[in-house]
Length: 270
Image (cartoon, rainbow, N blue to C red):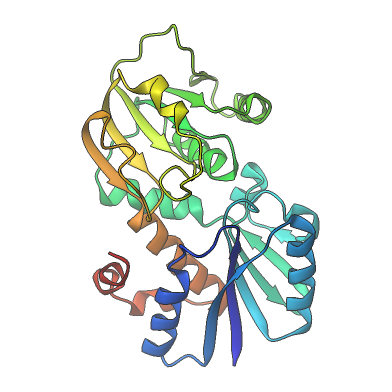
């Protein structure tokens, strides 16, 4: 039996074990998928090292460790190289291969919900690995402007410095309280709604904005964004499911996900 894991902190909210174990049973794959809560990055590295010696084939990586695996990865896909964010690894012949499947998942979410990104104005909450991935997608799909709203100014400025040369026609800046924002989308890339202790004061900065579309990339969410004004709100179920499908295809080196019914998987988590 092959072992698979999702690792992060916190991890109790994760529905990855639910859907992957259902999939393994459905496809008659001799494998088990478990959640592993790990409290610091040194223990993450140790866990991956131990996985290399056992029957572990792959892991999904969630917050807060997506940006902390680069030093132990032997191979990175192109998106992972650009974003420095990894949410899927495959262990093969004592090597660790790192992938960014969040980009693919977000792409499917946007397509599924028919959101037009071209020439759009966007406020992105967060400046971590998920935010870097979503901002890269916005750049690649010709958004007009990207505004970063984050308490961490260091990582926010790093995103601007890393990405500003990718498309000089797109304005990337930091949120300014004194500026008026009209016809903007809002994309949440933070644990607001998942972790009850997450500081939500940041939402007070945008409460007067009338948004076109609000996208919360979390599939486990609260009512934090319902108090805002918007035309449409989208949550992250599609992103979660399709990045999971992508992980399957990577681990089993095939298009095995084509055998799965998206609607049935969605019913499991909703």
